[in-house]
Image (cartoon, rainbow, N blue to C red; front, side, top):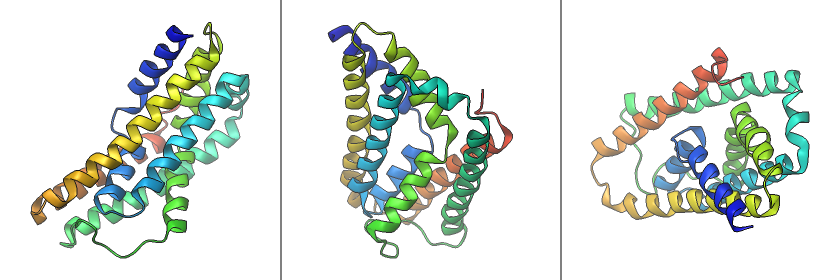
Length: 202
């Protein structure tokens, strides 16, 4: 079981550590101190559920639903492009991120945005349900693999939220905040373009 657990921990960590739409969104919400722990928890929980579904054998079934994946691809690209525009508009308009700044956001709005960033990206299904699910299903202990993958996901997203909270009061310069917002906007725009162009699809 321990070898399967280690495989799940390392493989899942390798997939989620690369900066992507989810990570950029968690970082943005954390730096703005807007429902950061809720956002991190939802991202980790979604990963946990999707990997679990894959390990149970649903990865092949989901991969065959081309119409649903296509709808998710375009909806995800549109949503990420909108989020990228909002971030870049704050930079161009001189409205930078501030620690705890920005208009107040309800937990319902944060939940909806997090679910959209997570579930409208077909790459999430390909990585968690299909790839991790297929690898986990053939492990000596699928349960051990699943636990390891879940620990990697929870550790990463909550760690990201915690680190951003520590950094926020130390980033006093408006230029730094604009640079962060610019980086987030460019990352989201890049992921949106890759989704729309089909570069992230098999």
